[in-house]
Image (cartoon, rainbow, N blue to C red; front, top):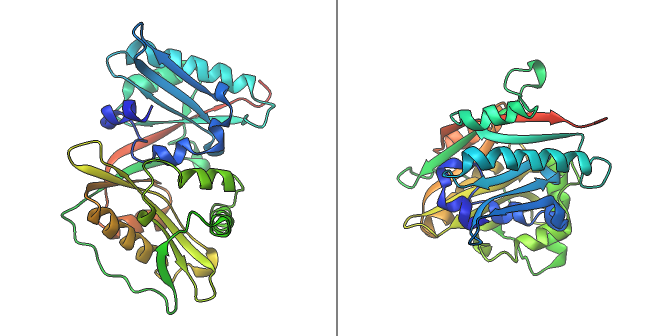
Length: 293
C-alpha cells in the first residue's frame, strides 16, 4: 500500500507519513480496509476508513483512476453507512484532494460530498508545504532547563506520557497507547527522529516526529505530528523542536521535507513559513454527513 502511494507521490497527500497513519486503530478492523487488484494480483488502489481522523485515506494508480476512483468512493460511501452506529463509525467523513484534481472533485460531488472551502464560519481547507535542503535552519534557543531528545519507545511510561500530551494538545482521546506503540515498531520509524521536549522534572512539554522515505534517489521527510502543551506555548518551543527535527532529517539525507497543515491555523502556518516551508499544493476538504442515514 505504501509502495503504491510512493510510486505516484505527486497524486497523493499522504506518502512519507503513511507509517504513522497505518499504525492507527482505524486499521484494527480489516473490513475498514479495501484493496483493488488486477488479474495478475497487482495492487491498483486501496482505501482505509481512518476513524481517528474522520477521513478516508486512499491511493490509486493514475492509469486506472478514471474507472477505479468512483468505485473506491462508492465502497467508502457504503462502508460509512454500514458502520455508522459502531465504534468505527462517524456522523461525517472527509476526503482530501488537491485543488488541481478536478476529476476527483467531480467524482466526490457526484456521490454527495461537498467542499468545505467556502461554507462560512466553519470553512476548512489545507495546504501541503515543502522545504528544500538548501534552506538554512535557524538556531533556536530552548526555554531554560528544557532539553530535546528522542522518545524512548521501549519504555511504556514514555509512550504513556506521550499519549497524555498528544491528547491534551489536540483535545481528543483518539491517540492511544497501542497506536503510539505501533509507530515505534514500524520498519520506517527512525528513533532519532522521534523527538520530545522534556522539563528538568521529566514532564513532556512538546513532541515532533520526523518520518523518512528512502525509496527514491533523493530521500524525503515529513513532519507529522508536532504539538506543544498549552502550558508551554509562547516560549518558542515549537520552533525549537521543529528546527531540531529538520536538522536531523537533513542529517539522514532528506532533500525535501513536507508538512501538511490547515491553512486557517495562522500560528502553524507562520511557524512553518518561518522554518523555510512554502506552499506547493492547496488541499480541498470534502465532507459528507451520515448521521440519520
